[in-house]
Length: 112
Image 1 (cartoon, rainbow, N blue to C red):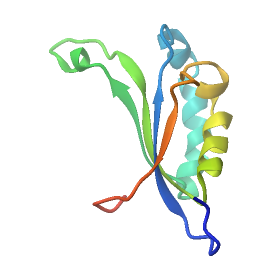
Image 2: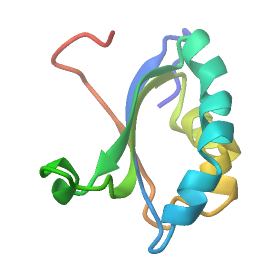
Image 3: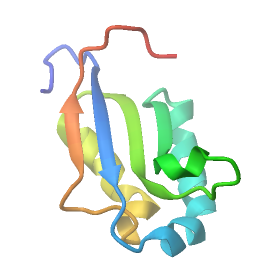
Image 4: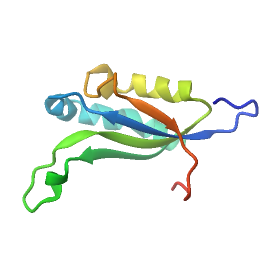
């Protein structure tokens, strides 16, 4: 979905965690945050979120993560994939590489 004019496209990325990845997620959290900061500053990463199991919001519930979701702007799906594959969560097997999905997105509301 690359464009000849260099216009950026919007993409939604769903990166589910591998089973049993909670320890690795916590271990690499600071490195993950440091790695995404330049993407925020460059305007590539628009919204990023850790996804929680519903039980996490119950009174006194512990946060139980099951993946990540992000909205990005990039010239192509390949560019998005390169950014994801450079992330420490990808490199250190937090995310389930076989279940990662990247969708072109036509947004109904503006991104921040």
